[in-house]
Image (cartoon, rainbow, N blue to C red; front, side, top):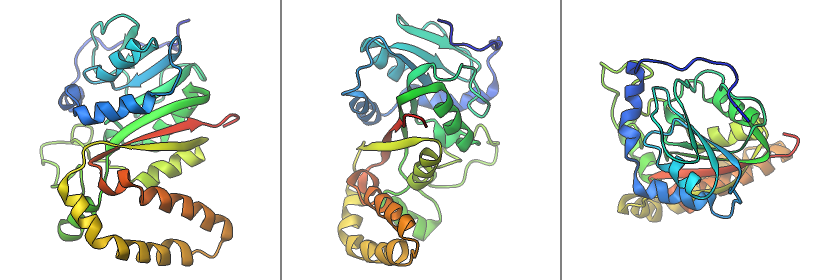
Length: 267
């Protein structure tokens, strides 16, 4: 079945797709975490969507597990191998050119931090996913404790440690739309998803050191500001859920995080 919904392929390489070149060789720790996130999912024979696939490492991994993969990119794409349909000219800031409820899973590897309209993208992912479908997203972890300390002293975070170069306009500057885990959790919540798991990638010494140093104070301040200050009992229960994620080892320690969420039935 053709899942494309009436649109034209781009014939020429667009300069904006230069922002994807650096992703052609992803960090192997990120790829390992993404592969682990798909473990336990019976994807053989299922239709999966790999958005802005870069070098197609994840698309090939999913296809090797027996999935039928649609791999997209902003620019042109060549043939990526058996079991993979290559679709060029897909701008993730626009509605996805696919029918509703036509995929069993969606993968985004180091993509969402480049997207101007992140809420629309999550809404579109929810639209094209079938009920009980899975989405896996990896992104720089700005809640890494070292990132928090960096922000205190420099005003910049993990993934964007200094200002974007003045020659890079929006759409080409890497990591200009960094996403806090809670912001992603919020979008998932309101568009019918449940966060199921977090996976860590590379862990360096600095976040381990700073976590050991600041953890008691972080917990005390969070309890006061996030739990005790909230008077609405329903919201307080949600705050507890969020705080448990925020104090999980992937969010405290990992360079990047891989978030796995499932679309609720009826969502």
